[in-house]
Image 1 (cartoon, rainbow, N blue to C red):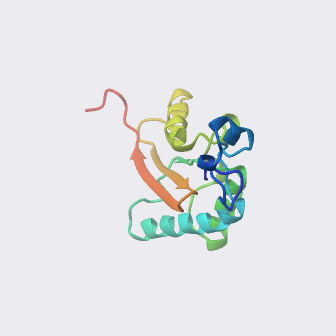
Image 2 (spheres, one colour):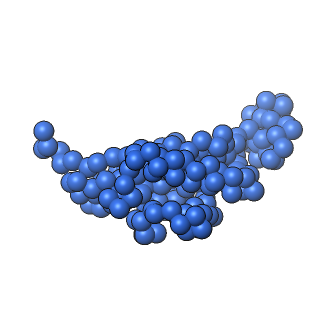
Length: 155
């Protein structure tokens, strides 16, 4: 994702306009994504998934949910396809939870909103394990966090 220009080349940024209104009118203040770079981000993410798996950081057979912030629906299909192509154990596709089609791409808040939504909807139970995946396409960074659900009354 990038912000501040009306094209992928970023030859002219919002600061080059005489006013913020002029930049907004020309589309320079709208977040954008260069979709042609998504295959690279997917490879980076699956490489890291495999690295963590090889290190024993998680067991995919015990993961209940894979909450994921996808920046686009196209990315979900690419992630699932790459996992399948590499024959990497990653649960069933329905275990990969995203709310992108309902709330859109809300950036860094997405994973927190996803987790809140899953809790509110009763999808997460005591003892469930979650492997969250948060790709950040602007800098080709993919973060994972491995969580275990505990009840509010647990010691």
